[in-house]
Length: 295
Ligand SMILES: [Zn+2]
Image (cartoon, rainbow, N blue to C red; front, side, top):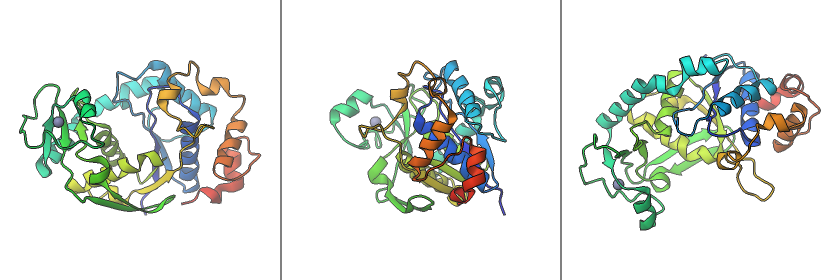
């Protein structure tokens, strides 16, 4: 049997919010209950939005929550030296080349303004037949999604998922205007590289999972379809709005500096899952309720 391998994959573009913490706790608990190995992988491809204080916040928060991980950087300097995604650009580029060989990839020079003025919900394929050279400066690369592309998988939290990817995403971007690989490519290539067997993410990423499953089929990589997925509900604000980085980017302090205790976080985490607990740490929680997190 393959070793159960999962990962926590935060982005250092804002202080972490409560929703991120719940995702980390759930991932760590599921991984430990399944005798798995946990990796910390920091998604820092978007260097413009990354800040050193947000990198520190990731390690401080995981340590504060007493989440342990076996793979990946143990601190900020290890991350910068050995694990930053910019070290893996060649891998992402070789994946993009495989996509060019096996699918219809085209350059798109539409500006965000032009697209929003046209008022389409999805990219309408404007540049598909223009034959703009791929090496055009400031051109994004899009991949053509054949109409009626359906992606299905059995999700551990959502049950049977079936998404019409072409209707949901249209021809999506695989390389950004600045020449860097897009999130879908980076995340998939890293998961394949590190042998991830189980991914815990919010339901806002269902579309991304479908896109990544489809990309892995395009390059005929057999591994990703065997990945287990658990898409958990998002934590909402009291007013029903989704918690997001754009909100937390306004936080001037890390959450762990303002929260009274990890016990309070663990208790609200459990009630989010529909349980009650008096546990003060994840060790204690696992001791009492480990069967809850076995998948
Ligand atoms: Zn275009």
